[in-house]
Length: 282
Image (cartoon, rainbow, N blue to C red; front, side, top):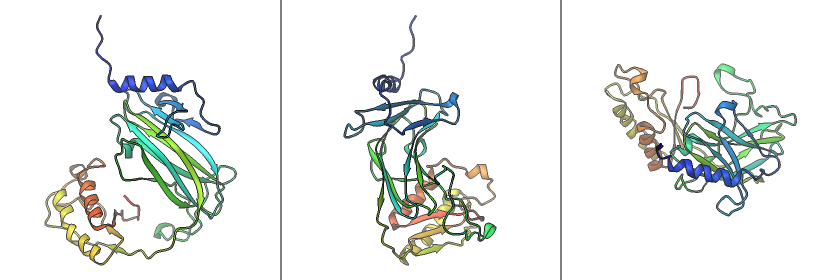
């Protein structure tokens, strides 16, 4: 009986797994998954990584929806700045920004979430001190399917005593993610600088399509750039209009609108965000 050939990615993941499963991860590193039935395969390769110093591996089979992470807890001193860095490589059809995510959680000595140092300025909870949100380090420029640095510098909340680093895999089938050269070190605070903010209050009523509505914001973004804005806030649901319903303009991320506005942001060397009316960034 003949069987259909298996995908090449399957054999690559299988060989990588067989080579690595006999090796225990370094002390303090653990694996986790929301549920056992969706856990991917975990392995540690002591000779992995670009400098052969070791890599943490997460692999999926042909099922979509698998999810899991490597975790490690670092001691930190609250109030200080910390620089996180990791090298990441993804092999297979998974999108790096969606399928391979690094996250940092701030906790106290007991392992409980900590609060921000300052009260909220939001109108719906004005004056209340909110919980410190996770940090999501950003990808450096380069080929996302080669070894690439994912990093960021953050100020730990004053009551933080621990930083839980999560190196997560999400959802993609027949994909392998490797993480290597993980570090979290104390650094000097970054030098302060002036940031210029701009807001665009505009409704392109004559535009009929999502693409036309997006294009209508281009001259306003260019005008903000001439005034040296660093961050430009755009209206919520800015591609919705002309009698369209939400499903009519729904897009994947990345998609046409993120590509369009991302290109404008790079051209003008600024950040673009769109906000819901409650103040949540999207």
